Length: 371
Image (cartoon, rainbow, N blue to C red; front, side, top):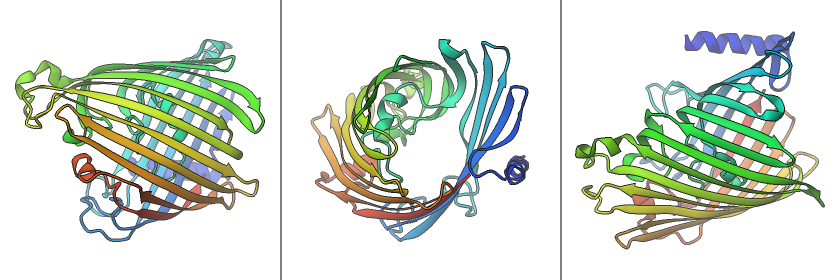
């Protein structure tokens, strides 16, 4: 079935002959667009990208692909239905998991667009706080050091969004689901069974000021885990719930000058009878980015990122990095880049406790074809 879907989508793109987001069908208010990408990236040793266990410390080339379908149909002059499905193909090596031949869903949702009255969607995606944290997510490979929630694509979500007069508003509710992504839940491998949750975000974007608009965003997120209702097993899964707030401020657009800063704070509550020996810990941090995009397709990106893990047993660990990236969009379809991240002053023990690799100086060189 997976191979059939992929074959049909690729055939549709070839038939359309379009450069990007190929519109393979559009008639009487109903449309189907196909989009995707294939990329190969050379990662240096120590990145954690070069093997499933992160133990070999070799340079390696990682090749992956994405394929997406955007669907929309006009129900009447006031309401349109829409849907999205996006899959990720792994490296093409034998086996299952992150380095196997999986074809995993990144986004799956259906919804209704009510025009000036907003839209609602249900399925698998990030909750509403994503809007508040994403302005600093502009690096290809080594960003999002302090951006908890960036990878929290969870199933069972429903979200309402509204935009108007420069204001954007989002509110989401999350139903129960097992093995959901939870950034910062290091002791559980950043995967937990969720009981329920909710999130909200709001922001304002001004008209252009000199080289682009100025925007401000804020958000809040909360989730409770299934183990809260089965405390006798809390020795094996200590997480009770978390709460998070975040805010960002930025200025600029896609070309020319762009800068943004983001602060995030996610606080985890744990059961007292866990073997970790703590009842609470907080993961917080700041990301600051600068970018200049030239008219010829070249861009230069720099940033500073700081993350902190503060435990109630007195242990307080910091990670801090500096990032630099050069991009070149050769054509609208083809992009190449080189990126490096340097450790500034990451505390001993931070990488071990969080299973990260911020104390390593790393680089990547990549090429991507997008359609």
